[in-house]
Each structure stands twice: as structure tokens, then as C-alpha cells.
Image 1: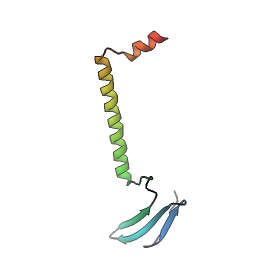
Image 2 (image 1 turned 30 degrees about the vertical axis):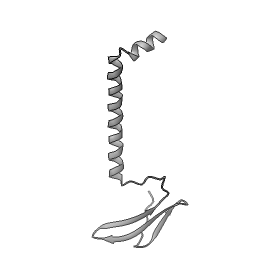
Image 3 (image 1 turned 45 degrees about the vertical axis):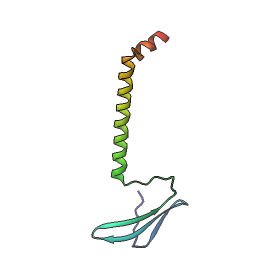
Image 4 (image 1 turned 120 degrees about the vertical axis):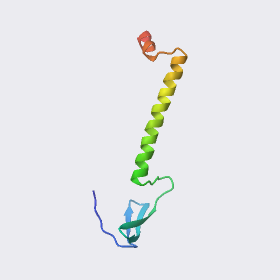
Length: 85
């Protein structure tokens, strides 16, 4: 991990097209401004982790729903694999 110290209004460059600027430091909070290409998603870590968990849960629910639908149609993936072998 790279550790840097910056004062308000000082900037950090990440590559050619990302800029992080310290806007203010007040009451133990640091306000940052981030300039990045629109196609680059920028999240706070806790929001990113929440989105990842929700995506994983949604994928499980979809897989479960697909398995239930296949069972209703009489499709057994294990049986299909053994018959093809």
C-alpha cells in the first residue's frame, strides 16, 4: 500500500486520467473530489461490498429458480450427463 500525505487542495494523479483532490479536512473527515472517465465506476468500499453481496444473492436466486423450473419440466441435468456419456 502506498501511503501519501496531502493538504487541502493538493492532488494525487492515478495514471493518465484519474485525479483525486483533497477538498477539505474537517472534524476528522476528509472530503475528496475524484475526476475519472465516465466508464470507470467509483464506489465507496462499503457500497461496493453491498452491491457484490446483492449480486451474489441474486445469482443464487436465479440459479435456484432455473433449477425449480427445469424440475417442473422434468429435466434432470445429472441424468442428461450420464445418458450422453
